[in-house]
Length: 104
Image 1: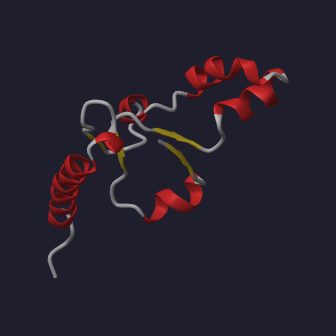
Image 2: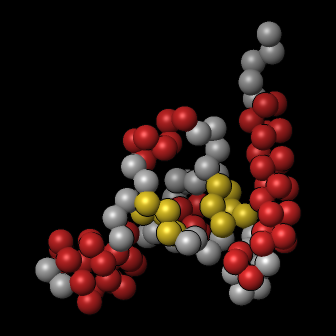
């Protein structure tokens, strides 16, 4: 899964940013970046590596707050299990976010 978004419009409204463990987060596709940098989109793998767009790299660099596990073979192979993992992660992060709000 690729998520193309403008970070300036996505991140300010988010308390937490979660990603499926095999997804990528990028503003531009690696093919587009390679085409811009090297004028050759066959360098897309090198561009993707330099852009550090995988979910694990985003977590390591603290761009996101957590990973949602995926079933073997990917989220599309077992949507029910994926939804269960998503529900668990959302509940965990929602309660964490709510517990940090000031008491009124």
